[in-house]
Image (cartoon, rainbow, N blue to C red; front, side, top):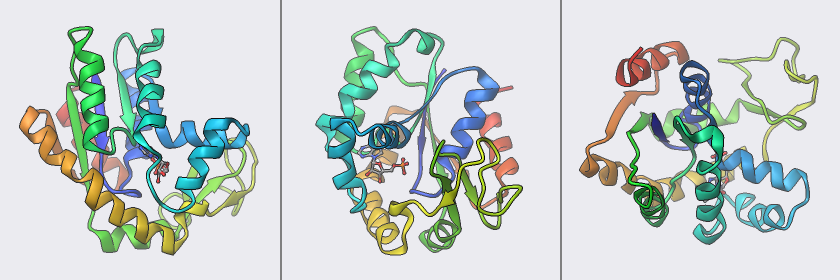
Length: 214
Ligand code: AMP
């Protein structure tokens, strides 16, 4: 089962992708998480990616595509995977298609989580992330057990640099210009499914399960 999560930043792609990965026993591959891990470890890739991420811009395709293609060829991806945050541009979608076609494979589902921009801006202002393990929370809809502290590792929770209001606005513009065209791309391929992302997290997941099967 090979799945792509689509949707604006903050639509809940990551949360749903984690739940999908758990339920169907496939790896969750988040390019954002991979970049953040590289930034934390001070790698060359991390240094380059940070320049773009802090501005709310996309990391160039040449730094992104090979990384994902390598990742989906690892053993744990044999039964499928859920991609969260990739592809984000048409050239990335084409690179993914090309890489899979070499093995006579293709993506099975593209799930678009629909949330209007106004709700995104509100949601992102309440988002918090753990400085240590990267787990995400929301001060209203998914608060940690102890304010400001990560449930998983006890790390400190902060607002990610790219979740600051001015950067969120920029990320939304980038989403509409560069990522939204993927909705038509996958509609044409016949694998697009849309769900209403304004509902409660569990209701959204129930919709996703209806699409993917029990
Ligand atoms: P995310 O955690 O998916 O919201 O990603 C955070 C940031 O990482 C984005 O705003 C981009 O700067 C960068 N990023 C993540 N995935 C990609 C991608 N597929 N292509 C380019 N940039 C990406």
